[in-house]
Length: 482
Image (cartoon, rainbow, N blue to C red):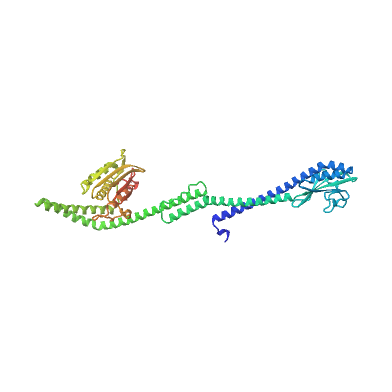
């Protein structure tokens, strides 16, 4: 598997851990080298100081032929580590005094020493780091008729062992720190990178599944927070686009329905109204010219009511078939609502309904077509009364709203099933046994002509609430139309 095929989590962990181990390794190596050099230099410096301190006494003893006195001083020096031995080497290379007596009188073996005249007065360190032995040389004057060299042998094995222990400890410490860093890095990666990514992925998955109102909600101030805000903005824009598409689709469907209504109304409107007018005149003539019993007069009244229902249906058809022209004049919304309530007060079932009015105390004037708007309110209130066959409470409220006034018509009736909510504004859709499905479609057209908005909320078994928001004035295109 190539590195590019790994997940982000694995890439960050591998890269971070590798960088950490490299930095720690280089740092530890440099640190060990430095301390090894410093430790060796310090040991050699101590040996040089000790040799220089003994030099006057040794020079004096050897100058007077007191080899034993010189030997005792040197034996006392090498009794303490790291000194491991000594030699006094004459200028001709022979060993005068040595910690190993068999070497005395013999030429010195091994790497030749510098000439005594070339050795600084302060002494010189020979051999280097990493070797098991090193030596410090100090020049001696007045020995053997000239100059000699005091060679102090140093045993560096203890120093090297300490350095090896330090290296092992440093390696173990580096490993532990690497593991700890990997754990901390993994936890931080999971919390600061992977968790936001999973949250972002989950939000997008919910949005792709069609869930409405989904937001990622990354409340952060870093790059992920800005990314989450951008995604939320895109989701909100997508929701608005979908809502606009649904609204436009619904508007196109309603326009198609209105076109069907217009074609139907143009064909049968006048054909129906003429016979209706003749039948209505005949009923009025019969009721005036002929004596009838109460039962016959009641039957004639029911026929007249049915004719009025047919006439209202025809008028609704004709209203939907032509554009809604407004005769807009200043009016109070409360007055229009009161007029509509008076119109429906005599309808069947109205006497079992309790009407509760709640008007805006300011009750500002709106520029509206009072007749058209009264017709729309009448339809809404009439539907509410029909939705409460056993009686109930009808609340009619006006209140300020953003962009104008809001009218709320709420009932405690049977409610509208969720599957029908999007259908009730369409022409000819009705769940009533004798409904035409034109009332709410006409209400929607009147509200739209005023530049307002209409929507509905409903719960089955608890009631329905219609909301109408009207602007202070209708759109310019709707102006005052006679």
